[in-house]
Amino acid sequence: MKNTLESITKIGIVPVITIEDTSKAIFLAKALVAGGIPCAEITFRTAQAAEAIREITSAVPEIIVGAGTVISIELAEQAVSAGAQFIVSPGFNPAVVDWCIEHGISVIPGVNNPTGVELGISKGLSLLKFFPAEVSGGIAMLDALAGPFPSISFMPTGGICPENLCDYIERKNVFAVGGSWMVKKDLIAREDWDSITKISQEAVLAIQTVRQKK
Image 1 (cartoon, rainbow, N blue to C red):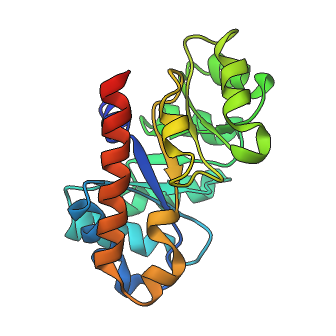
Image 2 (image 1 turned 120 degrees about the horizontal axis):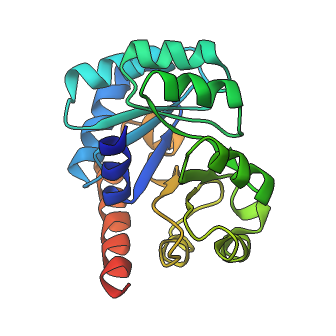
């Protein structure tokens, strides 16, 4: 668990991916790795999610693959059986969190208020997803949460883009961000792997530049 979350923290960004055609999954994973982002969150928003996770973990072992939009224990079981190394959820489902902890699976549940943060603390978690970030107060909310919860770090997701990426990464209570701008559906549909690699490289450079100044 710890090593997976440490790796995500080091990378600093988790591409949030919706797979509709599993034949593109491996190419997409390789494009991300080439762009310096050896990490991917495959969302369970399509029926192809589990198979995509299975194919990527088999063919591209250097990438850390997790499952997103995991809103039930059943989905968590499917994801882990397929090879998912971490679980992300949009909200805080105590049953899912407990299952992941019991099975030694890294879990990043979603919160957007102090009550959610306290739930995370009660489960022994220190890394939480802040979702949906922009419409939940964005940077102002993160700054507000930093005071009462100095030991908690967040992964803002939802509305993160190149224009605000650096502002989020600058926050001391942000360990990574989740985003989909480098894995947009149209780029995947037309198999524009070069663009995905290029956009990923730009994001990595931006994060590295900010972190060097911290």
